[in-house]
Amino acid sequence: MAFYIYTVQQLPSRLIEAAVDQISTLPGIGRRTALRLALSLLRRDSERVRSLAEAIVAMSEGVKPCDVCHNLTEQVTCSICAAPTRNRNLICVVEDIRDLLAIENVGSFRGVYHVLGGVISPMDGVGPSDLTIDPLIRRLSETNSDAGIDLSEVPVSESTTEIIFALPATMEGDTTAFFLYKKMVSFDIKITTLARGVAVGEALQHADEATLARSMDNRTLYEG
Image (cartoon, rainbow, N blue to C red; front, side, top):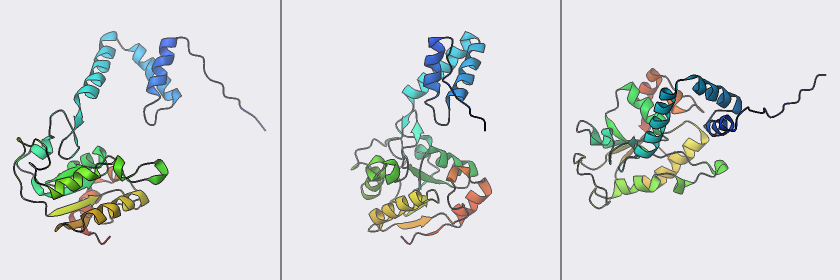
C-alpha cells in the first residue's frame, strides 16, 4: 500500500507567496490554483497587471448596495429601481445578486427586486439580522419619504401588491421564505413563490433559462 506525504511547497519569492496567500482567499480557489494564477500574472506585461489591479480597486471602492433593493450599483439607486418602465408594485425577493442576474437574463420579469444577501442558516451562523429583511419590511410598511431614503430619481409607484419568493429550493431557502411570510402575512399583499420547476436543492442561478421562466410564470400562492 503506497503512502503519499504532501509537503508545503516552498515558493521562490516572498512576493509570490504573498500574492498566492491573497488569491487563495477567494471562494473556490485553493493554493495550487492561486499559484497558477499568480504565475500567469507574472507572464503578463506590467501594464496589463496594473490595469487589472486598478480595476479591482475601483470596483471595491466604487460599487455599493442600492439604497432601495440592495442590488449592486455605483449610484444611490440601481438602474432597475430607477427605470420608469419597471412595475414597482411587484417585488421579487432573491438570495443574492447572482439570482437577480439569472432572472434578468430570462428577460420576462418586469418588476423590481429585493436582495437579501443570503438565506437563514443557523449551521453557518447566519440569522435574520444578518440579512436585509428589516429593510424589506420597512419598504413594504412605510412610504419612501418616511423610510428616510432619498429616492428623488426613482419614479413614484403605488403600494406593493405582490411579493415573489425566488429563493433556493433548499431547507435554508424554505426556512427563509417561512420567516418572511410570518413577517408579511399581516400586510394586504399577495405572496407567491416560484413553481417547483427548479429542482429541490438546486441554486437558482444554476437553473436553465427555460425552467426559470416557467417557474416564474407559473408561480403559486405561498401557503406558509
